[in-house]
Length: 271
Image (cartoon, rainbow, N blue to C red):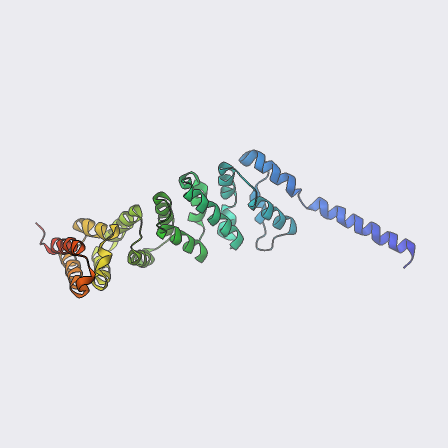
């Protein structure tokens, strides 16, 4: 190739590189500015997800850099707010994992309530991994109770009536519903269709009376006085008695005495 042609190609390549550099934002300095100033920065980290899922190289590089940065809890919280729209719209599994890991760590440190923008972001986004994450935290007895209640509240608020009942019964069978969620969701379901809830819970305790040894069952029994019919309450008491009879010696004497007393109370006619 003639020397002149080589020089032309070289100049064209250099010009293209300069033009490309001019089109790409200086992402390193933008990220540094956000880390220093947070929401006072003129640049928002949401721009790293504009055009998702087809992200540009500078966006990919910027996300990796910012997601792995050692941020204060306040800056992490602000970043969760900035990326909330992307969490909702982009179906980016890496981004979901970023939320899960940071919120998990905050909950275990006892800072879950401070990370309010994480909870807001998870409340407006929905996907199978997000539901699995919230369910897992809610039912994880090694987690602080406040974080478990927060996860359960955010999980249940996305459900319609039928799905709420299915999720509640699914969690009821694990015996790991945290207290605030147990009482709150029981009241919601009893207000909608109290007799149906008592029938469904009766079906479960009839098959496994040990399920009566949990806060969720206590909430059903005590709140049923305000909402359910006498017939439904009696049916729940009979279902519990049936389960205890079949269980035989598999139920401790102490539990049997308490649950038999609960069954008798449920069967008692209203005054």
